Amino acid sequence: MTSRFDEVIDRKGTHSAKWDKMESLYGVSPDDGLAMWVADMDFRPPDCVQAALRGMLDHGLYGYFGDDSAYLNAIQWWMSHRHGWEVSPDWIFTTHGLVNGTGLCVETWTQPGDAVVLFTPVYHAFHRIIKAAGREVRELPLAQVDGRYEMDFSAYDALMTGSEKLLVLCSPHNPGGRVWTRAELEQVAEFARKHDLVLVSDEIHHDLIMPGHSHTPMALIDDIKDRLVMMTATTKTFNIAGSHTGNVIIPDEKLRTQFAAKMAGLGLSPNSFGLIMATAAYSPEGAEWVDALNLYLDSNRKLFDAAVSAIPGLTTMPLEATYLSWVDFGALGMDDAEIARRVQQEARIAPNHGAPFGKGGETWLRFNIATPRARVIEAGERLQAAFADLQ
View 1: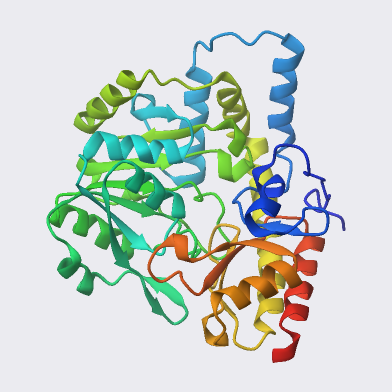
View 2: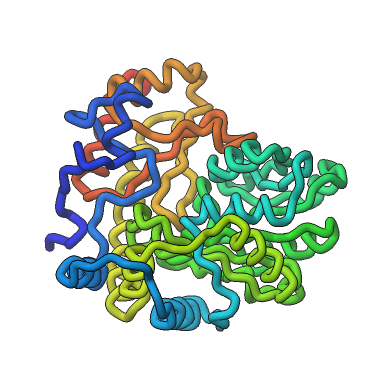
């Protein structure tokens, strides 16, 4: 049976960063290459989002947006029905995506020279934003236990210097695909309190959960709300990242006041297209689409894992969430240049390199499997051909 996600859509020449920048960055032509780097999907969003945009187009006026009550209600409904989390509309700030949200958090609760804590390897934009703001990145390396990442709190206290003011948690984890357990999140909360850190929980992938796993919002962990900042978005879930619309949700009044002052000082306000799309997406129709998406991604995961595992020396980290396969090439004994040559020049695949994700990512590549299944199958076949001499 053909799925709605099987349609191959040509994105070349559409200002797609994922497809139109792959040749300049990776030397892989979009004409015969596979773009598996940027974390957006090659799927159209659900029909409810498309219909909302068509309604805007038919109306034909694009003035300042007013009355965001439907938008705020949609966020409340989604968090309650999908995540068991009751949110007050007064807690919600809308930013230009969550990279922007992260930058605003860094600016609000740290000063130049302060350190921001990351569990690494982790989403590369965190590193970039923190360093660009003149802050220091404090890397707390994740441990590999039975092939997956775990946080090693027995080692972390010794790495802290006292200059740390903020902790940014990626939950679920990108690039490792971990869904942190409630017990692990409680340890994070305890660590943040012990070191007097504001805890920013980036949960942008919280809807993209593989069957058999369940995500717990950090907001449901006890005794953390006085230092907690939640970040969520429709953008990853519904493939509307170009709308640059994310939410920073802050239960604590003191932290809200501080964040509101920073936003006001910068004159920030959301764009109407993002609000309209998010309102439409956070709906029963959107929920049905996400359920179908996760089943499709799970099948892609199984196919890609099987293909990669057939190459001696390669291992994939078990994917519990996201659509980003994290593959370790370290056991091959090849240098980075040779691995890149085989993957990019021979297989003609553009993945993310692991080093920018921080300590522990050096031997890894990240592959985006949120693409029609035919491409996932082809990617597996190309990798096997590129490393055929090992088989």
